[in-house]
Image (cartoon, rainbow, N blue to C red; front, side, top):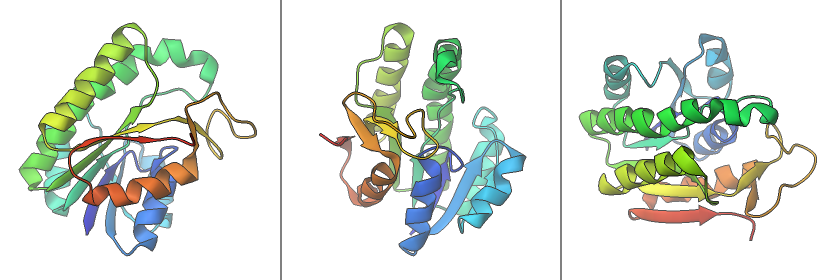
Length: 193
């Protein structure tokens, strides 16, 4: 299967791309940072440097790859968890505008499957509203919403200890996402408990 992964250099994107390549899929990994193209290439994927907010460039990149599936692992979160509140508007924008643009690009490319990251806990205020809009758009397009627990493990905010539930190890989250490429449209929760 040809799979276009948006957010390939992220916390879930890296182990997910690794899993998809190991399973024999042909993967394009999108990152907005040219400095991360070598990371994506090193995972065995074709790097695509593109900003999800440039709808025309995004459409062209996805169409050029001719994917069977598009996987949305995009977030806009800080490296320092103390700054999460400051990034709230940016992450909500990814969920709204980024999702719209990626769904449109997948449709233009004729991709038959769409899998998108979400969260398994309630979010307050506009973040919660943005997550609901994001999930509704994915489901209306016939896609699969993956509500992950809080990530722990390498590259996460919880590298050496576990967050409260719901939670999931990032490598387990990636491994359990792969079969969802064949799942019917709906919501799936991936968490330890």
